[in-house]
Length: 279
Image 1: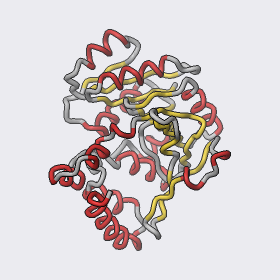
Image 2 (image 1 turned 60 degrees about the horizontal axis):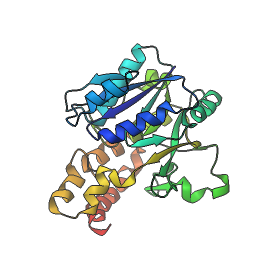
Image 3 (image 1 turned 45 degrees about the vertical axis):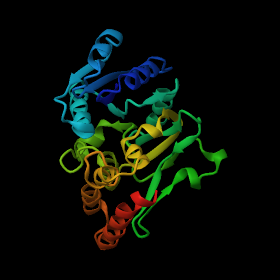
Image 4 (image 1 turned 60 degrees about the vertical axis):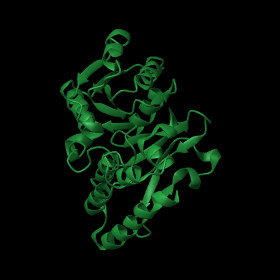
């Protein structure tokens, strides 16, 4: 059985639309766990009244993405999950999303599968996976590499976000949970998937499984839209900052081949410190 773990904090309407899309799936062989980490906008009541089929686990308001996700994963494992999917609440699944995940999941039983992200406003793909090149210190987008007429099926990547990530239980048995100590919010999904890769598991972007997303709603995007000293500081050091230097350092030290570390760190610091001002 697949268990879908969705960590939430406020943004009730996003959670509602996400859960409604899961109700419309052509394959209903799954259960949903929502970890409500202290929402104050009525999310808890909405879940109780409108979605009684969903298991709700309450957090203390200080879990952030990683600890909240781990809480849901532990519950799923205790319930006998064979597969676990991490899903963000600001996504809407197309009706055949779960069906397409099962299709490729049964053909690649030990692989992690990510979903193709579609901009809900333009209905165009915005993320289809990446590969890391440590030597060049670069991330290569598969959407830019793969011709449009070949953007179907599954394509290998080196890491993947957790917003729609299919994970066989054996992966958790092998490498453990998401690292909530080093990566309380950002980078936990990249670290987990790259750690899985290093442990011998394959990772793919499933171009047949699509999620509608809201790129403008990301915390990092909002920090970049309105330039200020406070936002600049949060970008580099805030727990929700996409350019968080501590997270980047921890990810590099843990996953980068040792001989590339000095170059990757120096280059990455420069990009993060000055990139906020330029973008």
